[in-house]
Image 1 (cartoon, rainbow, N blue to C red):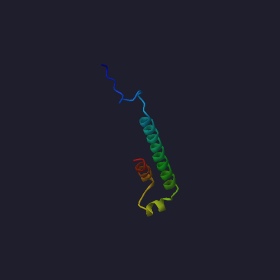
Image 2 (image 1 turned 120 degrees about the horizontal axis):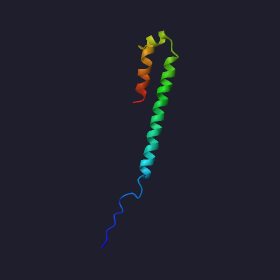
Image 3 (image 1 turned 90 degrees about the horizontal axis):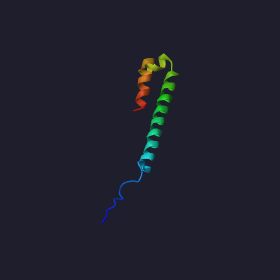
Image 4 (image 1 turned 45 degrees about the vertical axis):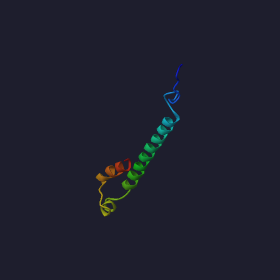
Length: 69
């Protein structure tokens, strides 16, 4: 008598893996966009305004990178 295992997916790409890919891509895009908006907003501030919040122009990239994590 032959046994047939039907618990494995028939193809290498299941619907879960495909949707997970798109969720990951959307999250990466959203993080990139948040960092871009943060960088642009901070870049518009003057040195005096940045000093008021305890930042310098050199800190802008560091702060923007924190948004992507």
